[in-house]
Figure (tube, rainbow, N blue to C red):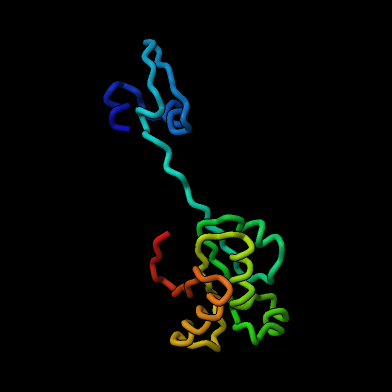
Length: 145
C-alpha cells in the first residue's frame, strides 16, 4: 500500500474498495486497478471450533468442508454413556463429525482429567480409526494450518 500513498492516495474508503477487488478512478482521471494495488486474493481458511457438544447435525453443517475442525473429545468411546450424560463427545464421535463434514484436519481437545498426557496418543489413535487426519491438540502448542 506504500505505492498508493506515494501517488498521493491517503488511506481511507478507497483503500477498502481496492481491497475488495474494485478498481477506482481518482479525481484526475487516473484508474487504479485493484489487482495492481493489492495483488491476487489469498484464499482464506475455514476453522470450525466445537466446544462442549454432543453429536448433532448442526455440528456437521457448521464444519462442512472446513480446513480444520477443533472438536472436544472428552472421553474415549467406551465411556459413551458418560459423554451423553454430561453433553460431551467421545473421540469416535468427534472423528465421525469430521468425516461426515468432509474436513481436511481434525484436532481433538478438552480431554477429561482422567487421561494423563501420555495417554493422549491412545485417544488420538481411537479417533484415527474413523478419521485418519486426527491429532490430539496440546495446550499452548502451535499448529500449522
